[in-house]
Figure 1 (cartoon, rainbow, N blue to C red):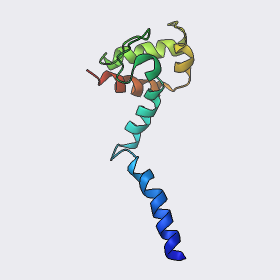
Figure 2 (cartoon, one colour):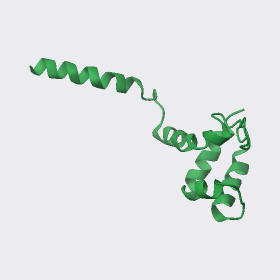
Figure 3 (cartoon, rainbow, N blue to C red):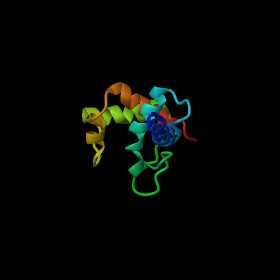
Length: 103
């Protein structure tokens, strides 16, 4: 019985382990999770195909400045103020860095 439980445990855990990112640093993985909420409007690589602004490949400082301006209320958008308010300044800078890496 003990061997059966061990086998079942391994059978259940192995597929989950296989779906985890391969050696991604926790900070990079966390940033990618935050950035995933942007993808509905801005595309997976920041290249919007609909009405969202293309943000992929823009300079990190430019993107961070826009995000911080939305957060502070200096810049007005449809829903960006609410999105930006949900993150710390550092988190917004990390998200900006994430999208700036796409060329």
